[in-house]
Amino acid sequence: MHEKHATNALLAKSLKELARSHSIEKITIKEITDGAGVIRPTFYNHFQDKYELLEWIILTELLEPIRPLIENRMVNEALLLLFINMEKDREFYMQASRLEGQNSFESIARDCVKGILLDIMEANAADKISQFPWLTPERIAEYYAQSMCSIVIVWIKSGMSISARELAKIYEYMMSHSIAEVLFG
Image (cartoon, rainbow, N blue to C red):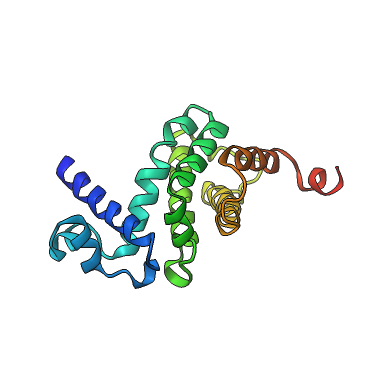
């Protein structure tokens, strides 16, 4: 298992370095494998395509480190760590955010966040919202994944013009206030 993870990390590092100077859409698998020092078949033993590699990066480098914090109800700290980790790889995420269409960064990230939230809710039996049977764990996870990814994409596309810490405070404010409070004070 360690060897697989090490190869994945090499491929991820190569993609991230290439993305500093190339559009991710235009980066080839050969360029990724050349940068990682492996042969093309190795890539396909690990990933279907570069978008699956991008998903692995999001899951491994962004979401796995924050999962223990979320599980321990330290959601604000988790979001701060998430935003700080994105800020560290600013150039990569600025390039990734330009991916549109079927393999858009936003849709890949949203699916990853939704999956983590669903896992955590299922582990904590959060489907006990009997007051609103329509409000399933899937719908809750989709709502929060959508809102977080929306704010993150806007932040990235604005050039990450505010700090990760400030973004975490803004997100906390948005999530802890009703729309009426935000609109009418």
